[in-house]
Amino acid sequence: DGGITQSPKYLFRKEGQNVTLSCEQNLNHDAMYWYRQDPGQGLRLIYYSQIVNDFQKGDIAEGYSVSREKKESFPLTVTSAQKNPTAFYLCASSIPDRVLGYTFGSGTRLTVV
Amino acid sequence: DAKTTQPPSMDCAEGRAANLPCNHSTISGNEYVYWYRQIHSQGPQYIIHGLKNNETNEMASLIITEDRKSSTLILPHATLRDTAVYYCIVRVRSSNTGKLIFGQGTTLQVKP
Image 1 (cartoon, rainbow over the protein chains, first blue to last red):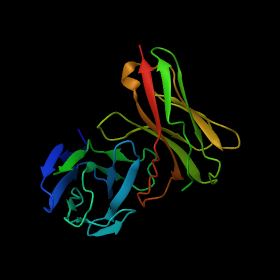
Image 2 (cartoon, rainbow over the protein chains, first blue to last red):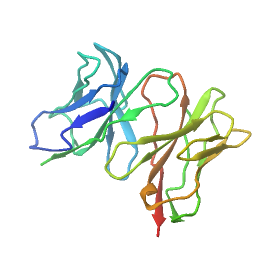
Image 3 (cartoon, chains in turn red, brown):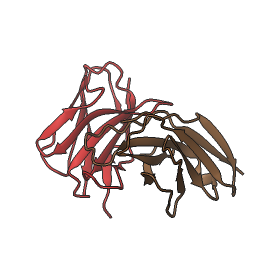
Image 4 (cartoon, each protein chain N blue to C red):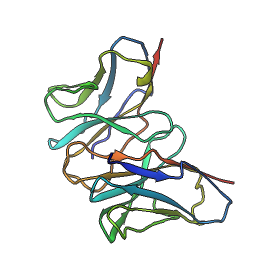
């Protein structure tokens, strides 16, 4: 079955360490996105990529980095510069101009201690 | 993309219809209304979308007012598994910038 896989589901890291969250899709979607969700809040866009080897900052990109070397993969690195990294991270993908909108992964809950 | 306003929470009895309202008074002519829901600790799930006409699929119905300034998502026979946060989003269909503005949504609690 096609879909988006985020791994791991739960991740713990010590403060000051960089951590990379994985996102893989086999939907053949061109565009991929990373969102952050804090308790009781909506989703906020971190980074997005419309095509391989290209990505754009979203609303809250500071302290994060991404790469898009393959169409299927869009890993997110949470760097030590991110002041409040503990959150629920969601990856999504889409095809431009398709009515069904976005497909989301099941998320990674990152806890920094 | 236009902003939306939803009530923060609603309750519904199991088996009854759940009617979730959304105001989008600044919607533009080329913006669609999308509904997603998010069950706790999972990714959002697409439910339905529409432009002008009312829409129905296997999950829900979407009623859009004639002036398009508001809409209502209807779950005809709510079950306990429909307990989730429901997000109303308006955006241009062809937009590929990823700016899905989710807001805080409506937390629907379906009670037995």
